[in-house]
Image (cartoon, rainbow, N blue to C red; front, side, top):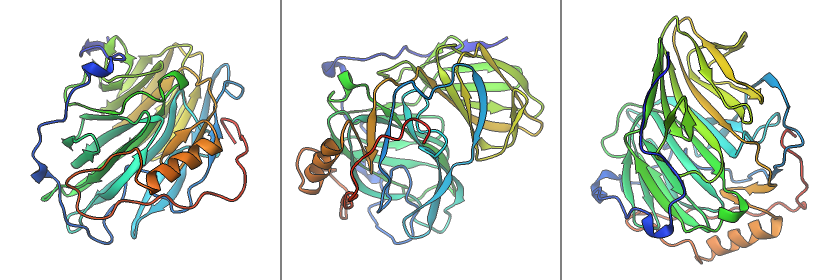
Length: 361
């Protein structure tokens, strides 16, 4: 039987209810820049792809098992991540529009994560660590150390800038996921915000421990603010586990194997792969022989068409161009105080006009 340890319910608070900057001391952040450091947690491509997607036309009306291996993306001098969303076979899962899985990487003798200040618009970033620590700074003045099983949730809204760095000293291993959630049109101009949730609700069953990042799963609701119906959960399966997890029929779902092999219903899921599960599911069966760590993503199919480029989510090519101009001229995103070094500059826009390509191609 699934047992939930509930947390505080989430929701959409008024701007006046937003918490102030976290009281972490600035000393948790390394101020040294180093070539060859790991660069995760953002789209740092110097020639980023334009992605136009949204709507329900390509959402299957039944359960499926589509394995999406993703692709490796070089970031920085010596780092690669596995980009699983957007990918050729699937560009959205509910409002989830971006998923990078990185590590586990041994950063014992390396600076680790060194991501300079960069902007975001029209989305929420979800920072989720399985191993290691990361220090977050943003243009609202927040300074927060993120640790495993803690939610770092940044709402970009009309515009925010942030940096991410490994502290000094830092743990030997770095392993995690960086995700984006597209904001619906009525909320994409909300004031920017950052929230840190160190205590998240947990659901347990025989051989299963599920931590709810966002939304509700099996009666447990995350305190994280959401702007569309969705769910995200970290699933730890013990060796020999065989469980059935209740789902919402009107959601579409996908599951990532962050470590270990598992079977989703009767289909094998290899480590590092993402499996799209479609819709109209009352439950999903998860099995593993040797143990696995999975990430479940789901949500109602996102009705609106979005344009993604670099670190921006907008609704048109002209809007994206405007965001780029604002950032590169230092207008409207604020300054990440306390960061020593140069900020990232947005690359050149593609010459070709934007063309919608749907949810899957």
